[in-house]
Structure formats: C-alpha cells, structure tokens
Image (tube, rainbow, N blue to C red; front, side):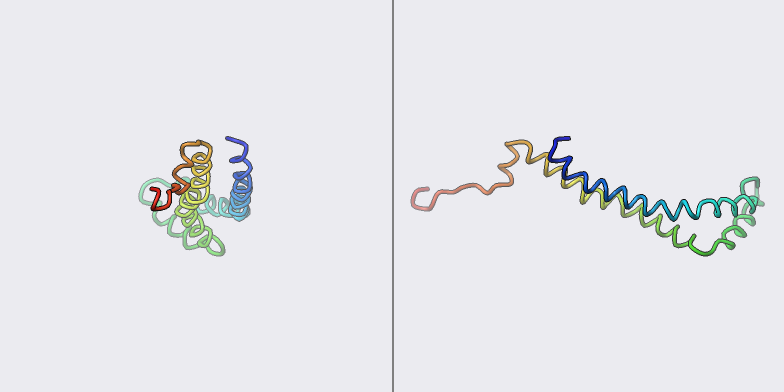
Length: 118
C-alpha cells in the first residue's frame, strides 16, 4: 500500500479490530456455558431419529443472552460485508484513482474558455 493509503486505512483497521473484539467478548463469555449445556444434552452422541427430541430439549433450555447473540450474529453476517464495501472499498478505490495522474481528469471539471473565444 502507498503511504497515504495506509495512513487513512489505519483508523479503519483499528475500528474494525475494536468492533471484532466487542463482538467476540460476549461469545467468549457465553461459550463455555453453552458448550457444557450441549455436552449435557447428549446431542453430540445421538444417531438417527432420537436427535430430534434431544435437539428440541436443548433449544428449549436455552435462555438468557443466547437468542440475542444468535440474532446479533445473523445481523453481523448480513451487514458487515456491506459496511466493509461501502467504507473501506470506496476509500481505497478513490486513493488508487488519485495515485494515477490520468485518473484525476475524471475528478476535475474541464476548463472551458468563455463564449466569445471558444
């Protein structure tokens, strides 16, 4: 990356890392309890038609933050790629265009001579 692009990108990189950490902390906290409930339910060792009843029992026992974390994860899967494309992709594309001298002509309006001379 060129120096100017890196200087502009590092704020976005720190913001992305902070958002990832903010999303990962609740998952790390809830993970061991959820894994213990999963192991106690017996879903991991079931085969055949008995899994349906075990899965229903396991899902009915889930409460607290788990439905919210699930919806938050689904929203993140849908929204994060769009946000990355809007804020990171557009900025990097603009810097690439500004790096090339011929591309600047597309950003600058043409200079026209006044009517009597033109």
